[in-house]
Image 1 (cartoon, rainbow, N blue to C red):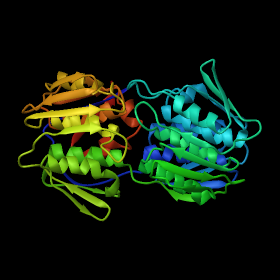
Image 2 (cartoon, rainbow, N blue to C red; image 1 turned 135 degrees about the horizontal axis):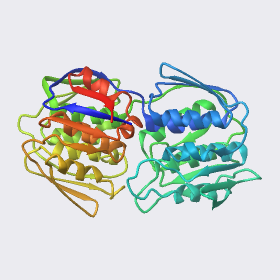
Image 3 (cartoon, rainbow, N blue to C red; image 1 turned 120 degrees about the vertical axis):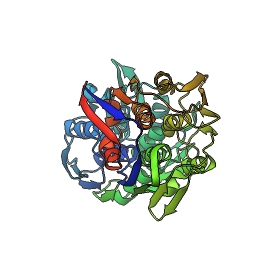
Image 4 (cartoon, helix red, strand yellow; image 1 turned 90 degrees about the horizontal axis):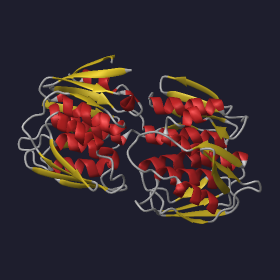
Length: 423
């Protein structure tokens, strides 16, 4: 097991290239199961989550090749409809093979998923949506077993849940519906850019999807899909994380992010600007510098296009040393604040109650051994360590490797001092 040693007092400058989106790549890779023909997907980030997905595809019988960010998948024949427990338990997003398997094989057997321990992440909306298309489902032996021996039929599906929409649930229903008979209407669909990217990929394959990016999606089923080439959108969460790195530790010239989609980051950019940080946009690049007089903010994590839950931990790291009072609320995953207890070990003044963190900014954090609890928490601890006094040890960094491609090397390229060593 590895750990990161982060030397504080960082001064960052230069340019960083943002990788392709992990959260877009995973369902797109799963969607290759819908065709017998070859699919070529570019800018697939080299992170452990995508590696697990490729292993799942291979286990199901697909031919997979990977080289320099380009993945080629040909699922001409599948050897079954069961995704293996040993892989599925490592990554929650593996649940998105359920829709494609059900559509193509008329059945799917997928273990209840694993991934980050950030509170309750129910799968009931996935099952409700697929049952709405005519599948029967049961949970047995830790597996979700779905079948549709006569095929799926289009229906109107409502995916609204207690905590809002479901991105992977929308993906699953959309992928299943493209081969269903008739027309499927998804109400309460997730509007995230990653859903739009999946819809564009499916439409290139020959699907008929309208309305992706809104809460109302219409899908007219087709008999078969073909192979395509596709480039994954930039990772907006990685980009947001590097914006926070710049806000915390940029030198006089700031840092520049290349290969980004600024429109996907509107909510994050607006918060940073309101806190006093200069953010400049030029085409597909963003530049951020330090604020002369930073101030805090009150933010609420909500479904897109609002502030993303995947960025609230990083904002907590920024607010920990921002003068005044800041409040961060998460309506999607109210229990997703385990990073706060670790930041308190570094001297942060944070109190958490009922899905809300109240943060009183301190002058500076101090180094301490800390432990990552999930993907975004690990990024937040890394950010907090950049300007802390002393050398911070971050344990369980396999969490950060799930979703960030070479983040330590990218920060080193900007001037940070980080070592990756055996724990």
